[in-house]
Image (cartoon, rainbow, N blue to C red):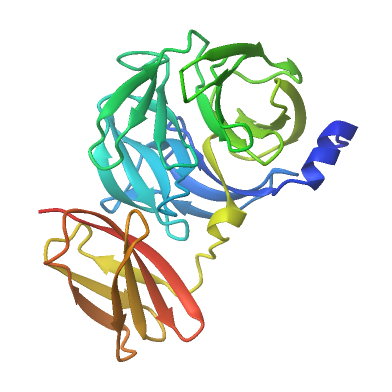
Length: 326
C-alpha cells in the first residue's frame, strides 16, 4: 500500500509498534504486538483473569505515574479494571466497574478517564475513575455518536480526544470539560471496534480491520489493514513499556491476589533480588536473595492494594504485578 505524503512524513517521526487488545466480539480476549505500518501481528497471548480467558477487552492504557498498563476486561456482563502483564496476558484485578466502560485513557498526572458506549447504563458519558475502587465520577457528557467509543490523551496540548462513531471526533478540555466537535474527513472510518492512541504528533486509530492515522483536526489517512477481524479496543506504545517477549524468563506469582504470602517461581535460572513498589512507584522492599528459582515473600504487613515487583538475575529483569486483598 502506498501512503499519502502527509501520513508517511508523520509516521517517520512516530513509534510504530503497539500492544493491542481485541474487542469482546471475537472468540476470546487476546493481546498482540502490532506493527502499525503494515498491520503485522506477533506475540499473541490470551488475556486471562483468575486463570480464565476473558470474553474480550474494551480498553487499554498506560499510567505514566505507576508505570502499569491498565485494561478493562469483560467476562459475561461484568466489566473489570485491572493491570495486565504484557508478556503473559495475565490480568491482576483492581476493581469492578459499575458501568460498561468502552475506552480508557490516562493524563500526565495519572488521572484515569473512562467513557461509556451506547450499551452503557448511562451511554456516551465521560468519567474519572478511581482505579483502586472502581468508583466513577461524572466528568462530562460529550454528546452523541454512533457506537465504537475511543478515547486518548494528547500530551502535547493537554486535551483528551474522543472518537464517538459516525464520524464524530472531539477534543475535551480536562480543566473545564469544554467539548469541541470535529468530524473525520479523508479516509472512511468503520463504525465499530475503535482504539485511539496519541503518537506525539497525531493519532493512530484502529477501526474494524483498518489502521489509520488521524490528525488533531480529524483528517484521517488509511495506513494498513490487519488480521484481527473484530478490531482492537486499546493500543499502548510498546516503546514506553518495553517490548516484552513471551519466551523470556517465565515467572509466576501465586496466589494473586495475596493475603499474607506470595510464592514466586521462575522456570529457569534463579532470583537474586526482588524490588517491590507501590502503584505510585515508591520502593518499599529491596530483597537480596539466594538465587533459588522459588522464593516465598511475606506480604502480611503490606496494605491492601496493587504493587509491582521487579525480579532480577544478573542483567535479566522481569516485571510482575500483584495485589493484596484481605
